[in-house]
Length: 73
Image 1 (cartoon, rainbow, N blue to C red):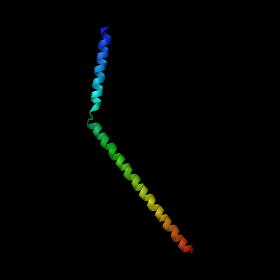
Image 2 (cartoon, rainbow, N blue to C red):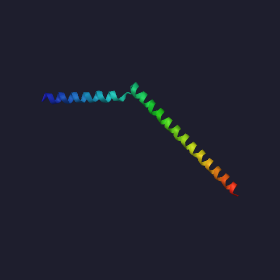
Image 3 (spheres, helix red, strand yellow):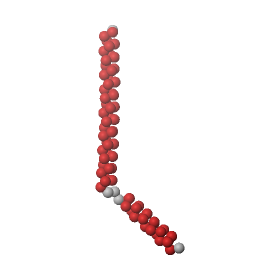
Image 4 (tube, one colour):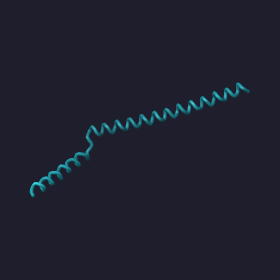
């Protein structure tokens, strides 16, 4: 009868320590979060650069078409 009570108590204490340890972020977690943020910012920057290139290419294509129309007329 005593063993299940002791086992239950030990499991509860273990769970308490595990959850308490998970609450605070250590240096590795903080570094990982900074890396994640840097990657997200870089990805957003690349997407914006890609959009700008696409817009420029579309404008260049339109100008080429306009020039072609002027040559035909």
